[in-house]
Length: 142
Length: 167
Image (cartoon, rainbow over all chains, first blue to last red; front, side, top):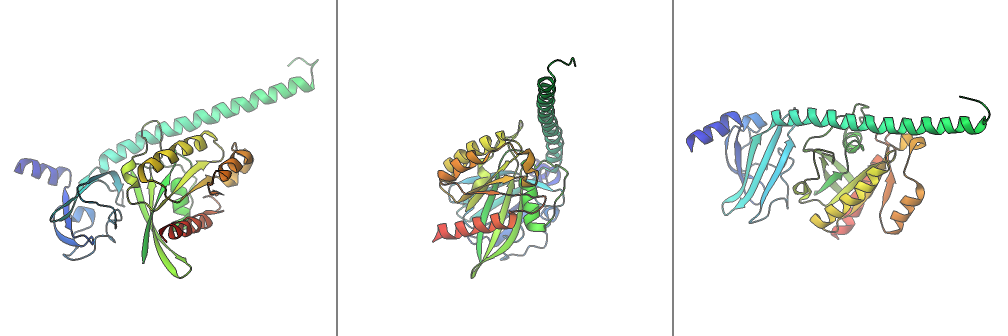
């Protein structure tokens, strides 16, 4: 268990926060500094520091998972939260490297798709232009 | 202060991120940069006597790799469906996404934004199709993240709809 926890803290930058029902910090642990939360004090509202924390976001007996939440400065985290009898538990795991890889792959794929769309459109326009030329000069050989 | 969460929903490369950047930072970049996951921005608006803090959830667009993750919609007060006026199929997909969002979060105020109004000479979406949607009760605005046309107005209009819905 300690090895797993150590791995999560060191490699995945695990951080966790316990919040009260008004989203104020009760307690916290892990690598909070990595997420810019090192100075967060007990009793302080988390809403201004973590934009995804807001009223009505977390409900009792429900676990919420947000994948690839951008936390600014090219930082991405997977966020897991659930409401416990002691408060709202929010867990952050760093996925910045995965997000960069996905971004690069998606970017290439989507750019290719857009290029293909433009090629199809250009082909249509060329065909129309060709037809117009043929119609306007029926006796000319092109 | 009232807080309202708005989600930007649509397929890839329709301009969701550009609309948010235009609205929040008055910026526009021609460079297409695909969104991974979700980016959250904030902006306050004054609507009459009320100050509304808008939390703008810019969701990654649906593409070959990713479909809409409905967990992002949790706690929303309203949403924008965004389509690209120069690509008609993005409107078809926006309509499918609207059904998916409605099944997940119920009847929330929403608006359809037909973006890239600055390229109107290349538009594939015709007025007839939009008129038919308006007849079914949809609110539609033409926007351009490049020029800013209709952007402030759209966010204001949705904020008003959300405030009216909570009364």
